[in-house]
Length: 455
Ligand code: F0G
Image (cartoon, rainbow, N blue to C red; front, side, top):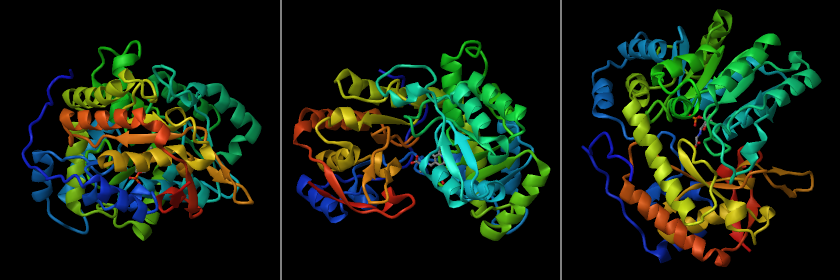
């Protein structure tokens, strides 16, 4: 059993479990796309760990005691102190969420025909690179594509793939190299410090700026401490500072390891680029001391960054995710191994081998999990990352996951036991689950709005 939670509950939100009949009705009415369900019709919501954290009493206190000002709020100063203390960045631009930081960064750097390598792009980074006329390229280590294979740092960039790619493409066509910590798309798998350092060295050799997609930097730092030789006795905060010290900049969604419900940061060391980011930020986000947020949101992030890097909190967080993963693994449910930092990823291909990928097995599993127990996961497979050819045929994604993300500090172990029991009972009747046909999909980020019907 994991150790007890390092907090207690001060405020509660009631949950309702609709009947199976109602759940079936709901999922049919939304075209088997759980993004279109009403949150109140969901019992355990594991759609995302983004913006769904429970905030602490101190976060709420700081939110209440900051003034709401267009310019120069105290909350901006608090955030400045946290970003300097914790991430070691002298200047930054607050933005309303991670993808806004991506939009500004890529607007200023990516030109038509450019390429942006990453270990693995998440959906919004992918879409933002494409939106600016660039091509996102995933150069993760091969182990990332083998869900059942254990490994300490399956999120790493493959350094020789990166070198070859730069040689073939030419550094003038690569405006920025990104590294996503942890690697969400491949199961929330961590990136080692050694790999971060190596990627930064390759980038420097070729004079290409190196940026972290730092959404889950704190969870990544916990993995470095517990798995990487030489870091066992290094304090988390020092690990975090070292991770960021290699980067020329970072994009960050404070909705993850900022423990906030909204917010993001674009950190840039280069003063010229920072200035341009501020100017563009004013056009599309807001004045740089509020960045598209209410001032109180900045206060929540300032405090959240401190709490997210607290070693007690991180130990609890890791144990909770691992608890759910271990329960499923022990029952033979095929999951991404080892368990990542923010979610348990169920392998849709292995869970439903009778459903070909063009019939969206992970999407079918996601819909069925809602029907089975009112639990909302998310498909990260062919619907999210697949392509369509000129004739409209589905080209499957390499990985076919159904992700159950665990919001931070929200659910108890009893909730997770309920989730585990539900997934296991679904696994036992997996042969009844049928594939889906996609009836509608927009071009970019289609999975948010797409619709399906059962085959
Ligand atoms: N990068 C990564 C690795 C992410 O996981 C996300 C968001 C973003 C960028 C964009 O941040 O949502 O604040 O604009 N991931 C969420 C998820 C939505 O469910 O994994 P955002």
